[in-house]
Length: 236
Image (tube, rainbow, N blue to C red; front, side, top):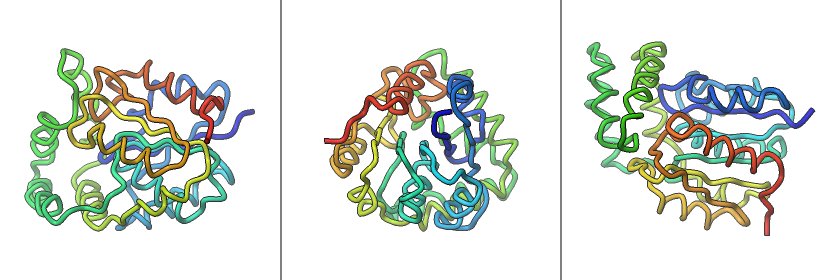
């Protein structure tokens, strides 16, 4: 059987974020969804994910999951055979962005988690079009299931996240950098920057998708991940 695949969801997301990809890949390889809900820091979350992962595996993370994936590479590079970073950010949180999280944290603690999630998503997350209504429904269901305490812990971990640029410069495994064309949270230009950090990496931009291409354009995203998994990405 092919090497196992570990998938790391984004903030306030669970296995439903990767439903299409799990269905597509589970016939040929073990697929593990590693939650990013346990731990107070990115390092602690990465340690929990590594503890539950196979000995050696392909690793793909989206958004916060990508940030955790980069920390896993720092902690245990010898265990990771391939790396896919989707709609994510290798840079530390700026003071301005960290400050913007404070009213969101306060709102979640006050019982307004759904309002916080909905207000954040509308302008920044999804591509325009009718399909965003169904995607927002799934995202809100995931957020309700995880709850306010997870939102607060993840927000604090992101505020204190490390700079991963040095980690990316040292990556030596086949690496896919992927993002949605309409991602305003982690835009295409940031992924072009990331591609420049990782020797030989490949950048794929998913059209008609925003920050959550696994849900917005599942077929195109799965096809890109399949090319990455089957060895067509070659390091130079």
